[in-house]
Length: 335
Image (cartoon, rainbow, N blue to C red; front, side):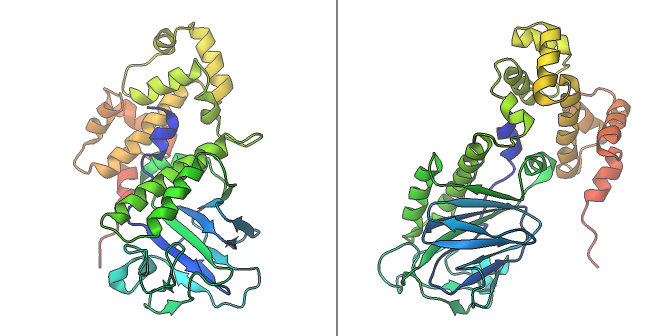
């Protein structure tokens, strides 16, 4: 398992699409939920994404923007638009609550012929706004991603608040599939769209991390190193193994000193420090997700035979002991 695959595995679309909307100006959609991660892609046309407290970003056809929450954002036909903002959030994506009709059935047979997802975009009250496929129409797809657990939060920490990806690259093929899928209304469509959005997000992040002159996280570049990359894959594949620097060096085929220096230079910390932080990240999710597991169970799962040693390491890294951390993550009882 490589680092990126581990970090992104908890970021999944699951019926989380707000809309696939073909909009004629003037229009303004205000996405109010502040989702941890939101992907916006324009199939055709253009518009302006206005993040909370940040400069507007022009989004052209076949370009993608990823917005990191918790800030909200608005998508408008032009800066200073005369359109009244339509609030889009959880209700806007739930048809049984009167929300967007295109969440499960994206093609509007009653709309104008041609184009993708023709027809109206619906707000939380079920009222229709704007007719699609007119002059200057823009087709927008938006996917909001819940981020589950501490593992995926490490990915969020590596991202800017607004990540703007130009057209081109591997994501072009995904866009073609998305455009084709939103133009029809077929059984299983939501599952297909969820997976396509997952694919789109992975392609977008990979291309953004690989762009020339970019500020990529240290672990991204380190994955490409023939020595450190192998070491990282081993630590992620076998986090509970009784690793020492010497054992890790033996598995990667270099000397202990070579691995220690190369790892610290590329990742920014020694191998066993990285391993401890990764184990504590895994443990944090296990404490929350496996309510019946004892602290000793979690300790063994991440490579500690002594629960007291594990608890001390967890408090040093996370700032609270395992029991305190678990209690702080439990939902408050309903009143």
